[in-house]
Amino acid sequence: MSPAPARPDGRTTVVVITHNRRAELLRTLGRLRELPERPRVVVTDNGSRDGTAEAVRRGFPEVTLLCPGRNLGAVGRNLAMRQVRTPYVAFCDDDTWWEPGSLRRAADLLDRRPGLAAVTARIVVEPSGTEDPVVAELRESPLTGPDWLPGPALGSFLAAATVMRADAFRAEGGFHPGLWLGGEEELLATDLLRHGWWLAYAEELTVHHAASPVRDSTERRVLGLRNTLWFTWLRRPLLPALRRTARLVAVAPRDRASVRAFALAAAGLPWVLRGRDPVPPELERRIAALEHARRDSPARRYVG
Image (cartoon, rainbow, N blue to C red; front, side, top):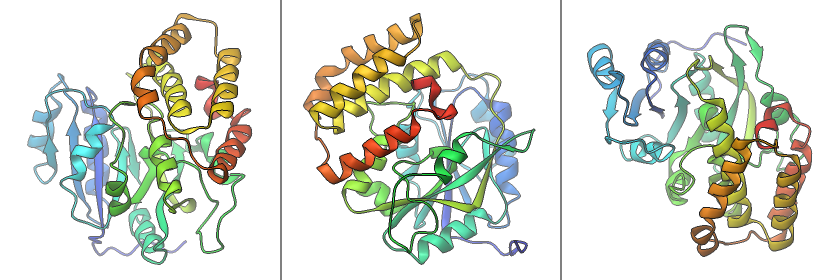
């Protein structure tokens, strides 16, 4: 691959959410500052108490910093989107960063394909330099799509490694506040697909991920399982929803985290049923194909 041009590219804004990860965020902002595209960066600090906001103001005055005063979870991205004026938005976590040239290539892909809502990048784990296990799942997606897609058609995306068309994001209302965080992408992705958009994996794009040492893997599993259940009952028809729930009950680890996840899911059932809007049969077939393909994925074990 030829070296990326050094000139700036104003088509994409980078949106980052963070919570009590000052060191990781400052590293990511340093990497983003070095990108040849020179993108504008918007950070939502979700109520950090470790001096994150002060450090960003001091070290990165060019960054647009939003401080809602509480932890909005994924909805912090919705808040940041109000500041976005570019046609594309690159989502980024506080422990991930885009490789030089990838934002330009992503914008090129989207420019040439008006029916494409988002492209998801290859994820490289640092410091080992190995691919994240989820990459194989993206690369081997069982879904089919039109020939003009830049890579395999996807049924969802990864917010830490995706460039999205800003208008498509806004048209669907962004991330659902009820899910908060943890697999929150699936609902937005399904609604995009429902309204005729396509999602794709693009091998030529790369994001680096150095997992934060302060992440709570147990809490992540609780939220992921809870949100999988909520998504299931928000969008899947009755019989598939019953089958999916039964399978999750069967395969989820027998521990307190799983009990808590199911209890939280049950507690939210009233609002979920009020918002229930099952997808049409064609889209349900695609969701079912993805579910089957993911059963043995090492990247999906935390949700069964």
